Length: 268
Ligand SMILES: O=C(O)CCC(=O)C(=O)O
Image (cartoon, rainbow, N blue to C red; front, side, top):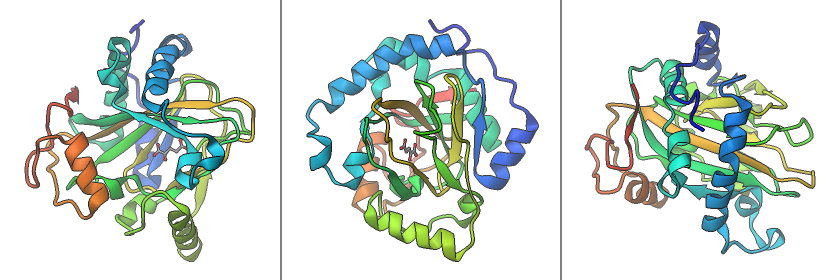
């Protein structure tokens, strides 16, 4: 089941260069398709358990229509834990960030349902009370993502702009960041269709969005968020960051090393 998950992935230097300049990259063939197929039922079952209270799609707001979201699934299931903790994934995250080690911020299954709406433009790190920009999300589909569903669109180079002080994922973030992309003439790029075993990685400040799912099938994705080992907790800027501090950095205070029991060192 865990075959390959602890083996090192041979990260081509051109991917590191692409990530450094654009803030996103697609790693094709990161993991064997049968490893993903084997873990998919456990991730989907754990995600279902966490989201069974969510009402019908048409009654939700824009954020709610974008995806069903279930986090820290590594705590629910041993096999999911092995997948999330995989040195293969964490090694790529460290390699792209060009840091010696990375810790877990949290994992998250993002299931865009059949007929689910677009994911508005946003910056992930606006939620995170972390004092480093050495942060990265791995986005790994559990099924092949055809072109009609599509993977994410990124504003290349936006990670170098840092905090654009936008709101959380919402109609407002879509409007504000679409305008920022236009005004700053930021190039946008998508890695298009993804095969099972491919994954994209994007930096914490990279602006990104995802298209709606017009198909009759759902789009389950597993994400893992990493930050550089040695990162400290920053003063939370607002309630969204206070929530993250309480939940993903449980027991820590501003100035502490971000290394709670929920943030194990995953690489090296
Ligand atoms: O899966 C999506 O629709 C969006 C995912 C996303 O925004 C992220 O992983 O940071």
